[in-house]
Figure 1: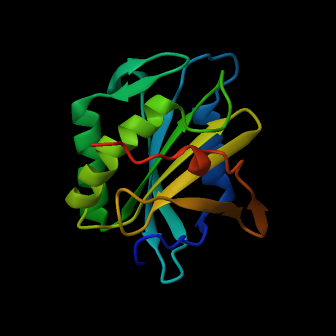
Figure 2: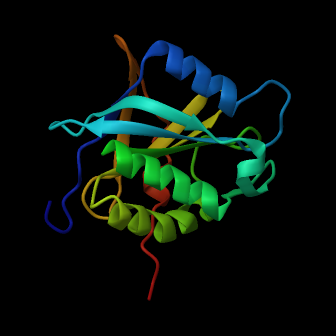
Length: 178
């Protein structure tokens, strides 16, 4: 798409068992800590991401984790990128905000400015998606063809059920000044 054009919202499809397992991992009862997982997806011609597998991130795979911030260990990042490469899949980053709203934080957005170009380069320009869940809501961003221009997540689709995101994150996106 040319500069300045808005990209259409992009859906992601998951099966119901995977979705239930993902939510259980991301928002365990009573835990105040952010959790994370990665989904491996095929991107169809209509830009729909179809998840084929996932990797929950264990507590020892973080460099830092708190109720308001997480950072993956370097070897964890390398492992999930390699797995996506080996599968020929796009990568979907998913994490939780158990004590915050379903919108990417300023530190999340700063991380995207660094991480998304790296992942898209390593995965030969495959699209990248990020989703954040809080109790009862979610939001997401999608980079289809350029690491500096995200599109809105349209829906999470589970069978015939279409779940709508908050839509708050795209409005917060800013390109950093140089």
